[in-house]
Image (cartoon, rainbow, N blue to C red; front, side, top):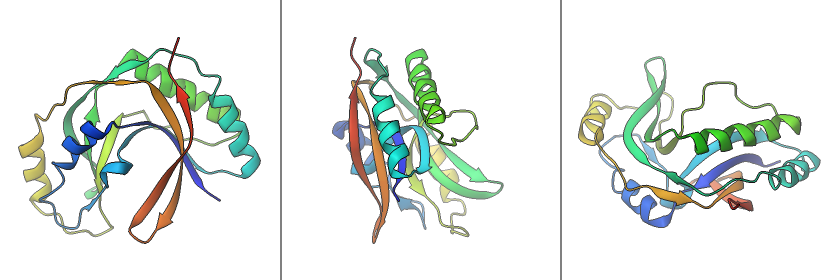
Length: 181
């Protein structure tokens, strides 16, 4: 059973610039450029019938393309244990609107979604439990704290499946939904 999520894909030129940040932190499992994305909703493991319903209902979301900008980096952690290094995505009305629409569709399809406050980001690296990071994360944050990229226009969002592969997760775009009015 696939794990599903809905996300904005990161354009290749943005992914290349983000990939240039990916070094200097031991035990970091850097996310490959082709897997970089801005998650809108993580659905988790979804049965076939529910997946088809979800896929169809997402097609009913209609909205215009909008600008997406990356500004800064941060770390997500569980207490003192770092979980991930991320590039922060600036909040916007359009991004928040789309995230709320996608989450509502997921809930209406019977998918239980995370109720934590939405923090738009692109995951750059994940850390294993007990990973050795030491002062390297602080150095990473200090070196890249003012990192900014030119905005790009999100012209579509996608439903992805995630399967475990030998080198990490393998993401497959199952459906693409244009943002047009």
